[in-house]
Length: 332
Image (cartoon, rainbow, N blue to C red):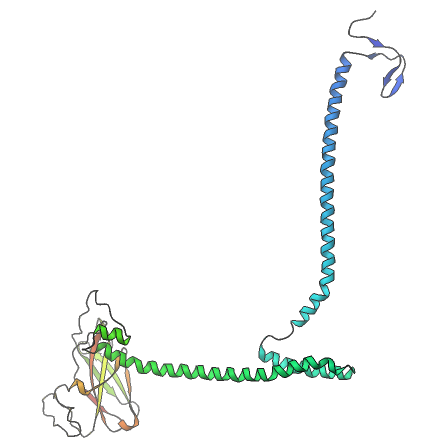
């Protein structure tokens, strides 16, 4: 008795590729649908395998190209190795001219001896001999020129230092001279002080000085303020102390406080004011910013008396009152 949808085939049925007679195998429609789904899955898997194979092929091609590049690079390094060895040997030549001159002479003598011992053709050394003949006088002239340049630079530095030392006291005098204007300062090229800020008062006190004859042809000036004679500090707002000096004959009587000094014919201008002296007869030595201050004299000043007048100068160049005069003999 047969049922619908469940027909069977009794013989000649395939099972895993082998014909097995008499085996009942379900037929259409249920087994066919299952086989179709399985076939679809097999097709999808086949396509995925084909894509993977394609990717593997691409990767293989890239690996092959990289291998070819590595091979070419290795070949290039093998070819250029002798060249690099030659360049490194040339780097043994000293860089400094002095070291090169010593090394080159030893090198030339050794090469000549090598050529002679091995009985080589001496004409091969002609380019080397020609280059050496040009190098030796050029190097000698260079050494001489460098020595002359060094001497010239040293002389220039010494001359400039001496020139600057001569400029400073002149500039300091002009800067504090009572007739100097800002236009004068600008023309001469010295500092034109800014007066737009808070004005600095002129020093109100006077400096005091004690003179020590420590060495021949030299005076040591120790400067203090009359308000604080035991302290070395300058008054507030003071830049330094102007030092003025003149030389007079030792026999000349110096002005005294009581005005009894006698005028000597050796220098009639020296005693115009019996209490202070005439500033016009003094010579400006400089601005002392530290104490003690050293004054040096030429040999022709020995035996004479050095007369000093001092005054404080503010940070803006405003001078204060003159000190009492002080004097000392220039020791021979």
